[in-house]
Image 1 (cartoon, rainbow, N blue to C red):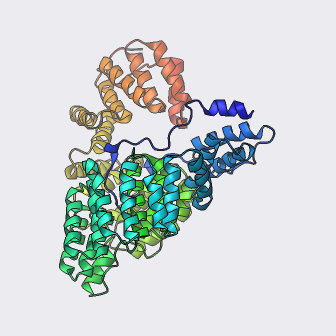
Image 2: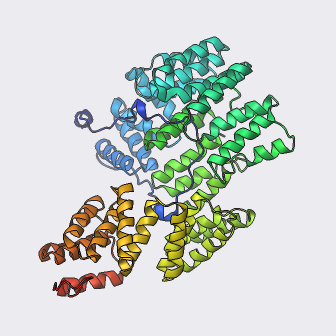
Image 3: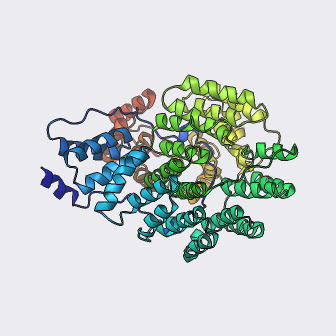
Length: 593
């Protein structure tokens, strides 16, 4: 069996952990993204409990079970099964690699390190194993060993970024600032690396005491950055504070908040500045901190590019070096949310210190995870507590409205949105979203006049918002009102989001209600192609097929609609009636039967 599994493993069935092109690098550091609404969270399966190792043919069975667990992102089970398979065949390099990666992804870096050493010895140049050994050497402050490990790694993929960054921090650990500067030079190979290079150059010059060089590098990083980087502004602001330039620091924080209205990330820093308190400490105080910042920065970039598995590995290494890195800990929570593992996300978020500026946004996300686990009452209580803590803010109440709306508690969600919107003193473009969300709840609660008013106000704030254009346009079409205007709105929404099956469906449904059945079929077929498993879209396509005389295909789509997700009782009854009798009347007097 040993030879059988080795033959199987030799086939191209194991994807590389990191398949990321150089052009994908984004900014090196940023605050966690705003929490998604409940409606945006994908359905979450109940957490799996790792089963006992498979008896009998332990090697092959545990290996296959490990692969399945890895596909399902069940890290506990993957670690268990691959480790047991490795026990049965300890010399199998591919099993060694899988067990090592499972341990690392699970945050068990000390255990992974032992396997990494074996893997690096058996397969020199193994990218992640060598990186783990370098990070472990950093943790022991053995900068010579860390540098030697980095020197042995091939300069390919993300190593073209990671090796220069980490090498520079080994040089700082050795007290060789000039060498650190030279280590960063290879990053000039790509403009995508500019923010990384200048950000780390700035922190290195800051530590070295060269204020002019540090400020120049911070400014270059800020200029090169196209978004809003919390870590960069935090580091630069601390630099200004420590050099007595409080006005410059205050402006930096204010500029950040202009780009991120409502952010609390620098609220405490601004308060300390106003009170003449102690300046904020440097973001990085030693070489190990700098290495952790590099690892976190790459993890954050990978996460934004949806390279979730690789992001988790780099983030685990960052936390191994700096366990109280609040942003890295919050990123673990976000990654687990992306993997539909809310229990693990909660555990990660609970490790973010209460004193962290990230804690407020983490608490908002935490409520979504509680709800995903069926602990809805806890989530509601948490959000209500947050809304009481900060009566000047609307975000907790908006999150509460979203949660209640996601649970189809329409009237309660309307009350939450009413309170949230009542706290908004000056409407800006960004406020289209709570108006849109309340409008959905109002429409579902059959309070159409209020819903229509909210949709229109949301459009006044954001005239080209595709979701608002689509929802209002679809609602008008469904009611047979304002059909010409509704059609134009939906066409605009499709132009803005051409690959959104629901919006394309709205266009087809508008054509259907206008009696333009052939055009309806074209759009509805495309909608079902884009979103094949939605019962409403399949039902709509069935109706359109019937109108153009394609009765057999119509009945096929209606039957398919009944098998999907399943439709509510009222919708199912209507579909069954259509299967029995066909369409005997329609949106226009077309004489179809």
